[in-house]
Length: 480
Image (cartoon, rainbow, N blue to C red; front, side):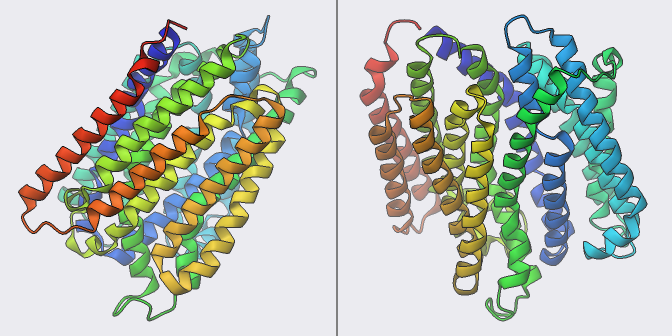
């Protein structure tokens, strides 16, 4: 179990650098919802969605390529770092320059005409994010999760202070959501100082033998990421397109988008766990790939990951009456019924990330692209069919269908090219039972808040105890 314990420890430390900052960022939601109307919050959500999509192109899959090539036998880590960083800087410089030159036109396309400055600030944010992506990957490869955490925590600390200052002290309605963008830009500028030594050690270089191989490995990863972020962000745009004007009484599609986007934040609790685990697991998978027992090890990692996510699904899914207060403005509470669906969707996304180990280790990253593009097709079709009849509940179901289909597709292909003995039946049983408990519990209305909270707490404790009794023998297996 030593390797699993080390992975768990590193996940906790990466949690400090990813979950804690994102949770603190989540705490900004009440500040934003009280400062902006649902319509304005919807605009902010769309802007950040565009950034999420473009960030994937800016980094071009080079983080994963860096892990792969830096861990090969006889690899020169500094050289691989230089090669990966060179590609990222060139691509991000060209794209940022294009955004700056075309800012007026792009502002019009993004429905923020007259706010060219927002486009310029977003371009700068994405450039900085891209430039520090490989240095952050280097910290993960060299197993420096504490330094990783310090950088992330300092950034979010600055972001919270700047948000509070702009929205509570220096607020000007004419700037509006621009304050949030500006706060992100100023906070991200800190990363340039934090990674000054690493960035100064970089030497631009192109290697005729290695660079094409890295590029060939990375671009399917980029396409996979692009399709993946489309799966996550597409529903926010399609609500504007496909939601009937009078679907929600006295609400415009823009207002519905704002409510949906705010409630979506509650489901990020699962995504934060997934991301923290992913930061630790990706270098873990690569470094243990040559071990003859790695398939069994990877299967156990996935099983325990699912158990942890099921506990989180249960804890968050039956305590919506508490979570809704994190939304601040009660106007947004009406959408909390979508949260359990999105929590389950992110659970499957986390499982999918675990399953992707097969095509990353066999250099068949093109399959990742095909799987994720398939997920994007499911997303588009499901949103088109479900939004007109179910509103943002339909968007939530579409997200679940997308990630579930990607998980199934990745598993089936993986068992063909890189068989791993996953505990499919037992893991699925945990997921199904947990989901059933969530909906059964939520169907019982307990008028007294404190009594309801106590009952929900007892359910969670009982669930954890049962899981422990079922899993105690595997936990006591000999060290691996």
